[in-house]
Structure formats: structure tokens, C-alpha cells
Amino acid sequence: MLKRKPTESERIESKRRKIEVMRLYRKSDNVKAHDRERKRIALSKPETSARQNTLQRERRALKRQQAINPHDDNIKHMKCVQTPSLYSPSCSCPLQDTFN
Image 1 (spheres, rainbow, N blue to C red):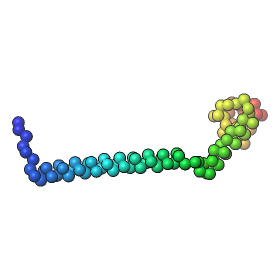
Image 2: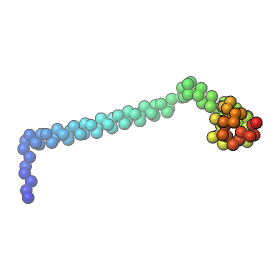
Image 3: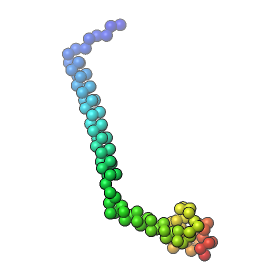
Image 4: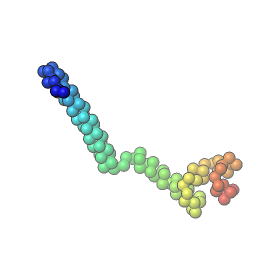
């Protein structure tokens, strides 16, 4: 079966659709490139003071944790050790006995 030749208006419409699709793809590529560039710039900058403060706070907390129990390197107990509820019976930490 022979394919019929598209009319002038159909050809123009088809071309317009192709151009629109290409424009959308180009736009999404630009957005992705822009995001990559922003991420690269953010990573290349020195850490902001707020981030440094957070890191310092975390380091101090870890040191405090290690000072309380230097032999426990299992971090899942860290929260338990630092909370005052450690000494209450509601603490389910297996290390509770060692601190009482």
C-alpha cells in the first residue's frame, strides 16, 4: 500500500512539532547544565561558617561521647549515652548497666 504524500499544511505542522520538541530538549539540557554548574560552584567554595559550626559541634559531641565511654565505638548508642534518660529504666540501651 502506498503512503500518501503529506499536504503543505501537514508538513508545516510536523516541522513545527519537531522544532518544539527540540526546543524542550534544549531547555531541559540547559537546566541540567545550570544545576551541575551551581553544584560545582557550591562544592568548590570553602565551607560556610554555619556548616563549620555544625561540623565542629558534631566533632565535640563525638569527643564527649568517647570521653564518656572510650571503648564504645558503636555510634548507635551515641544518642542514648548523651541523653539524661540514660539513667532511667526507660533507656533500652544494652550498655545502661555499665553506667549505673
